[in-house]
Image (cartoon, rainbow, N blue to C red; front, side):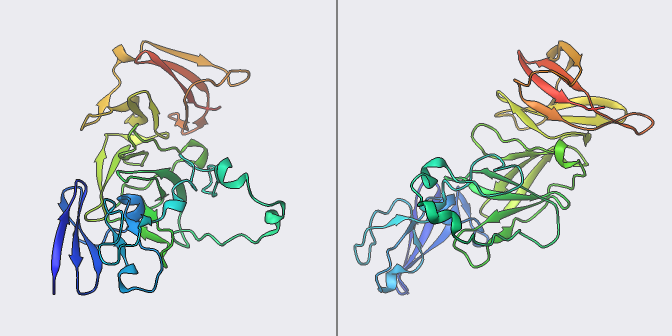
Length: 310
């Protein structure tokens, strides 16, 4: 068997001349423990071979290749047509598929009469939320957060099994749907999620198809948001309310100290213009009653709004 290893910046591939197939062996400097569950076309920009009836048309090729080393055919982006079908961050907020204007503008008038394709959830049971983000990949992936288990699922267009779950879980959350949100950093390297055991920063090890979780102290009482270079998450620690924050580039969580929150303004909901990022979360009093109100806080030189209804 003739085998040769190609090593590139973000990946390494094994070339098997006997079967004329390339196999992924390493991602982002780490040896692959299992076959990555994310589509390699979206994860690494892998190339596909045009259908031509030759043995080398099977499988994928490194993104750095322009033509097939066996037959000379020009290669094309695998999953390239799927890259713009999901609009970040949440689609319609309920996981429904949205198309950019450019992909629908040329559709025929009669297209509205065509039957839609069935889109299956990752599992028959569970509470799911969806987002479109890179998580270290070259192109955006469709990711499903199973809120009742804390598991993350990856959508795989073109595969027989459409959804695969990553190893590990971030923790369950029981927030009402109107209060839940996630946030990503500007480079979309990870996810900030609320959980009952505190907000978490989740990153993916694609070589092992597993998640790494860094958890802040407290119990999440609302979703996460990003304001500027900061990821912010409201938490309760005992009877004390505070805001956990994580600045881009930091490896640990920190707290928004009083010096960083110079003012806290309370307003009524009616007639208040919404021009800033929004938090919406339930706040339990000592008698366990649910309160909602509208609070605007000046933080780090920028503003954020918190929704707390009565």
